Image 1: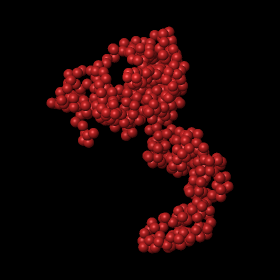
Image 2 (image 1 turned 90 degrees about the vertical axis):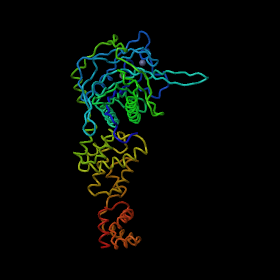
Image 3 (image 1 turned 120 degrees about the vertical axis):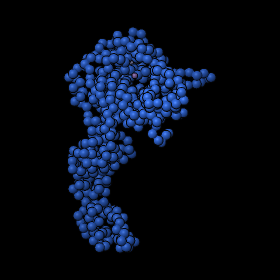
Length: 487
Ligand code: ZN
Ligand code: MN
């Protein structure tokens, strides 16, 4: 890792493959959620590429692809089609992949990175995933097994413009893209399940002898984590630079190379030295008709788009007064953010307090017992009412935690729980004063420190007074009475 800036400019473009959030596969009725299923149990003649089997397109996949485009500010052309991309590989039983070549479903969009930089989205096209290979060794022989469960799962390939100029920016791009796709329901994009994969085009540019040099690029294939993305971009750009400096074949080569990334060894390795689009012999898929997305349906899909994470974070900060950090925490999980908004709907003047409860108590309870915010045992409306009771001074924040715990365990209306558990905040100042006296007596050193000028020496007494009051006192009243007593 170099600390100083590299002696070249980086130019990065990314092709992202994401599995779409559909029940069934792209061209057959087999289940699309393949991860973890026993090998070759989610297959049929279509996704096994058996002779005579005919594809039937998945309407939902097409709509999700259009939705992704709309969320990325793309245009939806009114004419599109599928094409055959021919190549031979053991995980591709038909010998071709149905993809889209010159007329993709969606084109010419952009997304905005945090900080405001825009990255162009050139196109996004629909295709089908391949099977998976498993290499092993046994009985003195090496073997490869093939599992076709993933074969035919709908895949969206999103191609960015080469607008990124550092590994950090590339990572921000894929994180932003993922946020948008998850938010719009297009894909769950579980990277750990291979449901999002990145092909990263890396090139370097620099001045040499008064000329701008732009050596042929490398395409790093199939990265499936942010860590791999960072490591591979740093390694490969540096490798291009060193190869150029040492007078390697990169000085005479014209086409790009394709490399893989080995996370174990922390380096890239050569896969193919040359690959041109002609090699794929693309032609229109003869088993499918051309497609004309209906303008009215596209308009419906656009209207159904939720607010995107960047805009939502900004609104939480600007309109609801949350900190950047709280806004980020909430928006990172759409259900949590929805929950927060529903609770704020009940108690609109206490957005910050509601956020604290959602990020604190609710998240802790969900973590402890499992589940997500959508089905939480305390409904957002109940939490909103509870926060309103605190704001109105009816229950102390400490006692409110007990109320929350009770709602979580047994349900019920917060106000009723406050009453049955006797948690209503007391305005009985004599009782509070009596508790203060007891605590002062038990802590003579705190009082002495305070008299020596340690202003904060009394802060530690509020807690003990509160527990004597069983959480039913107002912290501000306790503080005032302590000061009256020692003053
Ligand atoms: Zn099938
Ligand atoms: Mn592809």
